[in-house]
Image 1 (cartoon, helix red, strand yellow):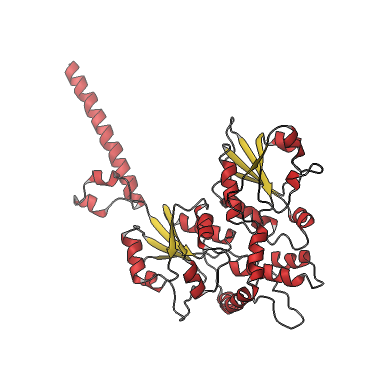
Image 2 (cartoon, one colour; image 1 turned 30 degrees about the vertical axis):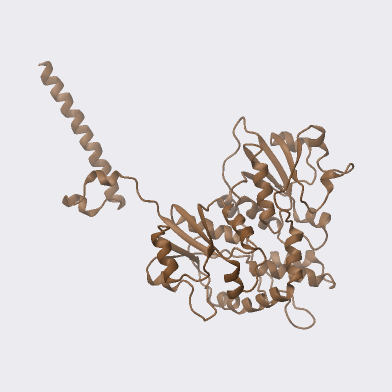
Length: 419
């Protein structure tokens, strides 16, 4: 009798297990993740529980003057797969196809590697996807799909740079991020240089850029850089998409660093990396446009507060930002955010952090929690602007060349799903 009870219990357990496995298979089948051959006895059911091969997607670009538009493109590309591999085009290829880059390859590599959605980077990628390189992507890098934005990428001979990927059926498209392009940013700087001898103030000029007005026309009737400025539409959803969405732990060492972070560059990335190494959570304060303009002059900032905030948020070393942080680091700020260290790099646009009087870091200094970190790279926002000024004729020519394709894109632009 006891044996009969055990038999009944055992049958129930086995039957329950069979039902559970059957329900799991039914769930997978309804989701479309179960091979059709399974029901016909052609596929072993246990193979279905093996780890799925990650979907690897590839996106390439010049990533010159890297900005939040590039970062949003990489974010969208990453969402189409499990792992994102990014190809960074060589300096030689950029010169041959677009004109001289503002930032050299090693700086562009630093920028791309620092984007939180990037898993792997390939240096010296070709500007066009050739048969040979596409085979290398599929075979060596195990790429499943090649990604690009809805804006056309045309080679000097007029052909589509992604024609082969499209023909192979391995191409996917994402939505272009409105409001900014490398061409636009270079145009802003060229305008700022020219406007120094013009009565129009930079603050007025920047407002036009920020609100999407067309490039100002000068007395000679020509635009300064041939740049059609897009509308920049900051939304709360975009900020959420770029944010980590996580706060510091109860015992986290919170490190604070602030600045303008204008024309976000490799120097910024490297000092943020150094700052993050000091603690568990990196909080970045970003000064508003009025503060930056008041401290650095009427020609600054080139990028507005929302644009600068998104660029910083995209950096993998950053955990949180204060949008419109105060110039002076107060006791209240330190207490509110439970800051353990306030840091500053040696390479900076001003020497205010070294002053005896009117030092914005006087409070953290008096508390013994202020540190000056050696900046790994001797690059500042002024460095980038000087590169543009020194070679402004070449960049102006490049921008004028780009104007035609930009105009055509906006004339033919249609709604594209995605974000």
